[in-house]
Length: 193
Image (cartoon, rainbow, N blue to C red; front, side, top):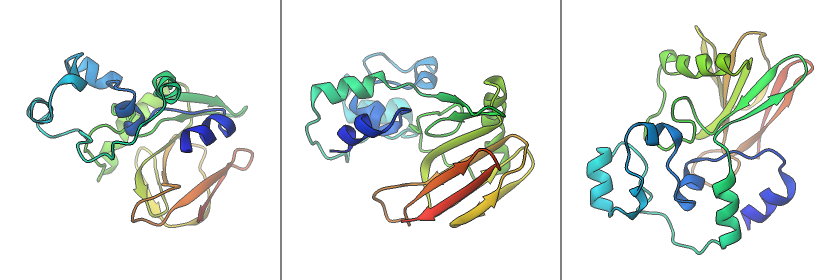
């Protein structure tokens, strides 16, 4: 049971798009976009029409029961987490601002798509932003004017604001991996598993 392991071993957990679905929560940015409070009571066709099919609707999700206690846990997860590392702080999100939970079908394909997240990091006084959701085969690092995509391995990080998108740790068709960030150097090690 994934949720049991997360509850047992993780001390910082943020909500992603699937967590939002299973806990029947609308992400902050969708609530601000005038999505109805009864979103999860609408049928699939109504949700498709309202959203113009621009967000994940989970009509293909496997309907496996989730314990009420685990749904309560998912409901309690924040959309962001800031971690103070001494020399700098890190903003953890599931995806990029304004879609911090990855609920939309949008995928960044240009440096300009990372700039709102860099600005959001700055407003939270964070030098680094770490996100997932993209299921990359490796990782990418974006700053205000640069974007690089790498597969796996080590890389030194600059001392300027950067967004790091990491690989998925489980499932999917892509190569999975994990990231280890040494905040003293700072250096990122992305390991394929």
